[in-house]
Image (cartoon, rainbow, N blue to C red):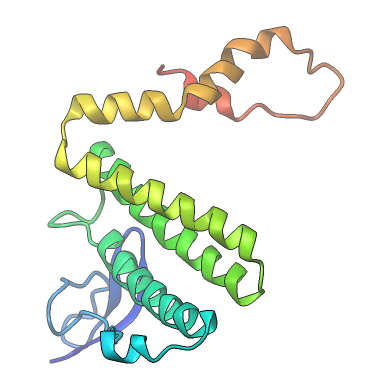
Length: 180
């Protein structure tokens, strides 16, 4: 029986199986969402006459990329959740998808400067994911997490110097920094 994909989320590939009624589906040829491949034809590109022709192709490619990243970010392997180390990579995959979505949104609103800023963040996150995968180790993930939380740790260290008396402000970063 064929599965009917219902939703993809960062916690797993979700859908409804007609046979079992389970909401967690294995990712295979039957459950893989259909992603249309964008044709990149050098001969057709040679006929482009404006920047808009190139941008249209770039947008289509970004949409396709976002779809693949979304599927990749939503796979959890045999377990239905990520370990801390897997979450460092999976979380960055989710971030790539969100940044691509935001970049496309800004492009459609003709906000080129913001779109290019987001494109740079997409690139930087892709490089981080590639590096984390190529050099995967618990020590690397520990170093990555510590470096990622350095600003929050500085806030934690400086928070006793800041007077919060008389305000309703809660300092949520304290719990995140306790393990550093």
